[in-house]
Image (tube, rainbow, N blue to C red; front, side, top):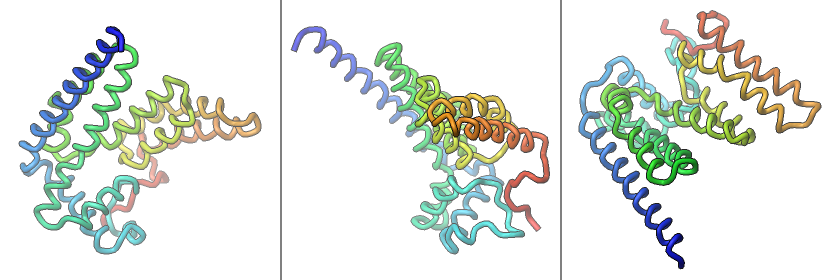
Length: 240
């Protein structure tokens, strides 16, 4: 093995240590704050949904008179933890649900930046995500799960930037399965929908390109309805 190859392996090992060291510290910081009360409304809602899913399963979850404004993707996560944990343990797990997604975001950032700026820069970028206060306080401290939407959206943007549309489109669609249709999410979808619609048109047969473009436009129209609070847009069942 020549000197250049040994140097490259040494840099890769150093970057790996930096990345996973930052991830370990970030996880510890999250575990130090996740036992708090958090935002009672959201934590209590996720807790109740997990218990309901464990009791009746996903097929009977959505029904008139029962409030749920989240799409099914994240509810499958709640179903899993609700089937395993109960009581205070379940509440704590709900508070910590953003941690796996945060780790996924950090690893994805590492892989993206490593390819252009080198392994150490990639490790520092992923570590910055794990150590910055925002995801820590919004996630385990407050009880939000925004990282579950951030991860697929970031993956979609990365794949789109590489023109790997067969990967970008499924990741983009996954965003709608893990995020509630808030105005901010709607604005993001409104802004990026045409990009992914045009991208999907590049990787299908000419006969179906029009359909792909229409799907992109439909995503934009749906986002606009959500943004202005159109009552015809499905957003889950309201409380009776």
